[in-house]
Length: 576
Image 1 (cartoon, helix red, strand yellow):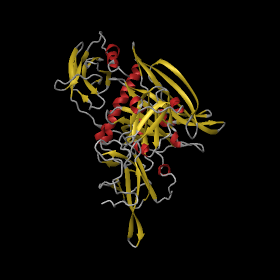
Image 2: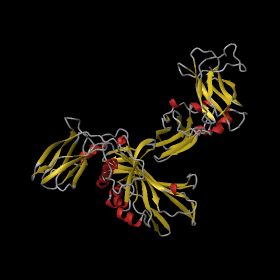
Image 3: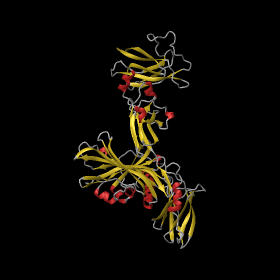
Image 4: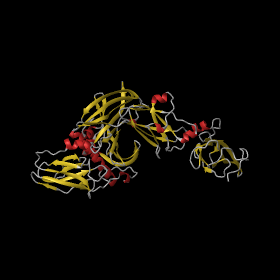
């Protein structure tokens, strides 16, 4: 959607919301923020009759303009809705026969901040999403998005080029065994059509058709229906989805019935309050032996035309696949929008995205500050040196939660490489992971560093593998510049108990290599260890909490690599 920020509004004013010149009465004008604030483009404005029913709707243009022909004389209100802002309802306007009424609608800018909503950690499930202040606020933002999707679908002015695909997946690895796809050009919304809500609630989301089962998902019409709301209860949760903080509206069946039911989460972006995706799973679903229920489900991803309506951009549904009556894998069908068109204008959709998290196997914690690079798989297979992160557009660094997002990936096969100063200090390089980007999919990966035992064997070859000993790995760094310092002898000291309260100090050392790396092995895991550059009075102390401990050591600027005269490995002073 690059460079398309004004496309939708230009189309709206020319073909979607213009009043007929033959209309008997018209209300038209502009929408802006109060106190002479800026004009508001892309607001969803509705004309309501005296009973509060919507009789017209459209998006304001780039100049914040709108124009509605009313169905007759009478009193009408205007409702202005923006994602991320409170809804505004005007006072009634009275129109007489044949009147053209110019108005300026001033809207107070009242932002909705989803990230400020309090989400209780409980199993509460409200009978209606309008219950509870936080849930009601989130549901209102969801409703706005879904209603624009329904509105655009009914208008049919947009055309999409999209791909439908089917894949047969291996039962354990989900590797693609068979795949087919077909391109559809210049088709109106929606790219798929759900079964009506009342039929879904009555007959269930999986029904037997001849000798096979038909799995069903849902669309915006179903989510907004009274039948769906009456059959489910609702709650809130927070999570990181696709590398971005999300607020989720959860739903599950109120009552257990004999038909297959559905539950899931409607995810909203916490920052923008925009609808991101719907994730679904099935309840009360009988499955054959060997089928993993967690792999059965569906996902519908939404996007938004700039200053325009939401629409479905990606979707898939996955269910068990049987051959000759036996479970042999999973079948996954879906699609992805590649191009949108409105009138004579058209634009490409985005590319694929790789998201994930890197975790430290030693501490089990997320690993921030790791370099993540995606490069051509053939280059990795040919053992070509990996590029520097600064030299490739497909690279990033994990955040404080160890997460990464690499976007803009054209279709292709990539090698995912992860590196980190801790791994470099230990002389460890992770294997590159194969990632396939096809039809604008989002690929999720979880990357773990080697286990503590593997790291210990790597940095301490030939050392005792006793479970009671550990190793410290780090980099000697210049205290002022933070750069690695080679050739510095790093000394470690710990105490060993001799019995009857007696103990003796034990010393070991290692010299930092050309990249400032050092590793010292063999200290016990039940007491403190102190580190210092040999011959200096200042030391850093740590309590070993794992088999391998990461600990850098600062070296005073100007320190030389040679040990201090009179200091030797066998005759070192205690750290005091």
